[in-house]
Image (cartoon, rainbow, N blue to C red):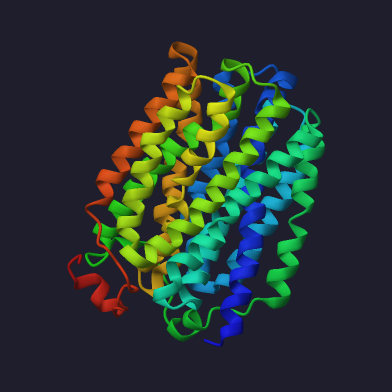
Length: 402
């Protein structure tokens, strides 16, 4: 692999995933204004986020299969185009029901980007640097969050213009990937017979698939439940003005960006598994502290600390890809992470319902407990420093889980 190739992938994947993150997070930040325009209850507001994540969950099978059979580049381009078009279309949405449908379809594209960029990094960067490379690419998620906070602060309550500009902005990563990305050389070398989703449930890979999906599901359920409703909690429960909430979220995302890149280095030093356990445990312990913080100054300081530990999705980028051989890497890693996001689809809805009964603060603490459970399940998975071995197709059907 020529050195220039890995740097092109690193830069282009960062930009692509930043737009993916921007469009996911815009909904959380604009949810109070969307609810006000359509007269939505807290449960209906949570359902909008749920529809997005359900679409992402469905993409775990469709886009991963596409990437393993037809190439990483095609899968990435299709994913970007789908979520860009259907996000921009929200500018003309007439009612809650159409909004729900468009968010589901956009989710199909949003989910595909994670799997494609993660697989590109695993297949272009050496194992000793893979943790920090994947973490850097996926640290574009908080970078996208910071951009989303700036845009919402400037454009809300005009959420229609906000989604339109975000959607057409996807032209930027589409041009970068089209002109500068080559197909993964490792995928080209390994491409043989068609890949089926059933292969990731073969005796050789079944345990890894099920445990990886469980860890991702628990972690992302807790994280998405908390992050979707956090702006609303700060605004309604704490009485913080919308503009100040945008500032708080921008600072929080800067802390997350730092955490992704620090944990990327940690992952290469102590192993992806140990770094994931550390990240998840730290997140579970600091979220309740953020919820009970006494004043705005404490919130401003605790926010970046809490977000610093939210680096687990960046480490997943390398770890889940290494769990699977090249032949089924996009299918396996995408299945674990995006089915996890599909499970997390019910988190905003569940937390919205819980908020009606016990308050958002209680719901956020429950999310912390769920994240801690994911850290315990992570103990059952292997600590990988190198990619998974590449078994033959017949070996996938006969080997025991390692």
